[in-house]
Length: 112
Ligand SMILES: [Mg+2]
Image 1 (cartoon, rainbow, N blue to C red):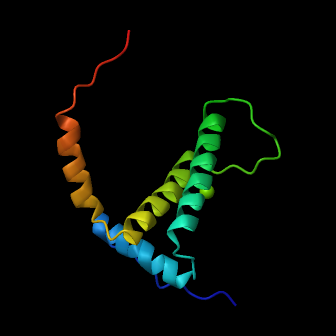
Image 2 (tube, protein in one colour):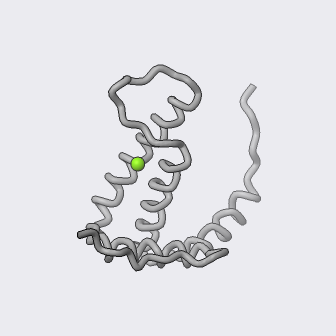
């Protein structure tokens, strides 16, 4: 019999809430929390995302491929981004704010 999930994500979650959710998810599903495996899994999910995008923009793909939607694959990638942040005890909201302050000072130009 399938066990009932106790996972719950509140309304209007912060990034910290998402990070905590992923920690809870890993416990509930007995997922490996090794950083190296998380990185490999994220790589796989990025591949699935790109495949879903290729399908979405009508590029040719193997007809036997099982492909999810772009939105589902984005979530899979996000889960591993959050998992890797957790492995390093990174507060992703704080890191985002700090990195964007650096990015704002950069000069962005197009090569013509
Ligand atoms: Mg996937």
